[in-house]
Structure formats: C-alpha cells, structure tokens
Length: 79
Image (cartoon, rainbow, N blue to C red):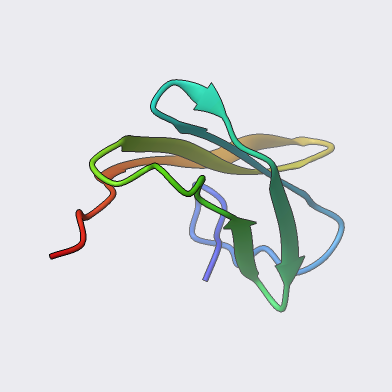
C-alpha cells in the first residue's frame, strides 16, 4: 500500500506516475492509484530477453512531498 513519508496511507487526491526504461529506451506505461495501491503496467518488447529494466513509481499531491521508489531487474532469458 502506498504511503507518504509519515506512513499516512495515500488514498485520494494524489497523482500516480511511472517511468520505465528497457535497455535504456523508454517504454509506454500506464499508471493508476486505487484504494492506496499504485499500479504501473507496461509491455516488454519482443526481443528484451536479458535486458535491464529500470523504473520509478511516484505519487504526488499538492502540499505533500512526492513519495517515490525505484526498481531494477533483468528480463529472464527463456530456456
């Protein structure tokens, strides 16, 4: 569940955002905030096996600092 820095749950009035790169190229993403859960969806390119995926999810609202988290993973190769 998404929360502000003081652990207050983020429920309404906030704007979610996702930024994703696959092998350094920006990916098309969609994001939403529903009942305190930030969801970020994207589709990997067909030939992305072994590529690095890096991203940041964030939530912003007027009068509050932006809450954000970053992640990174390698796309598994098929065996």
